[in-house]
Length: 368
Image (cartoon, rainbow, N blue to C red; front, side, top):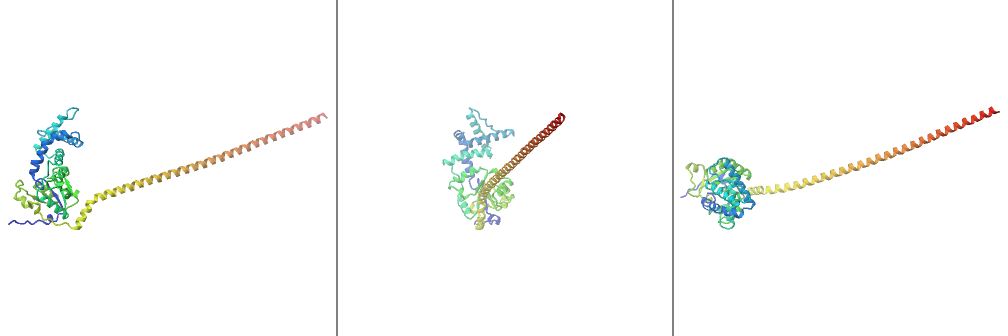
């Protein structure tokens, strides 16, 4: 008789579920036996057919920079990528292919490698060559958890693009509508505590349950304040007695009892999800108001300037009027002066005439 596990209330009451992919939702063999070989086998044809696309150029640039960094750090066996010239396209493509295969042989998980792999896989998903694998219990669990008010997120070393391709083109159909968001190593390594703190901060929730098959990932999540449950899908996932004593272990998502999220909590979650859109709308309205205020201010300043100009013109007119009045006054003064001078001349003439008359009288007397 199978023993039914009892789960801590922190696990059963979690509002948000963070899911690992490889070994948790998806078979490790799918990644190892399907995705990786497809990328390796098709990298040459993909690059040859899509060399001029901007996303490919960007991926190659990142790979070239990584190769240069590897060389500067004396990474053993690094394959450099040839600088592109006028007529060496084939040589450049060959060096990129060799670099990709070298990295994959070492099971490297660099961002530059993941980006190009994602582009190659995208082509395979689109033409139907690849279908994403998920365990049989995954679709029902995702649907049930989402319906009961839980928010679901994915955290994988694979790029966000690759994650969306897998769940959007799975053997069980498109599962993306059940997933609220995705995280990759851009938030940090999966075995670093800060990575899980970054995720908690971005999600905005402190009741997060992380499901993974890797003990070191569970430890990091636990230290960051999350709860964690180990998933042991097959014999490939080996766990020690110490691991099993520290964490609850499930073989299927159906083994995990989760409480239904309350209607109130659903409402809060919905508001949190809608908040960015509302905030963006408010910011947009604020921008319009700010622009209107600025325009009104400019108009007010223009009116003030016009008023100053009018006042200046009026003052100039007053000055002109004053100048005219002064000019008239000067003219009148000049006329008075001229009249005075004329009067003086007349007076002098009269005086002269009087003197002449007196002289004549004197002469007459002498003659007598």
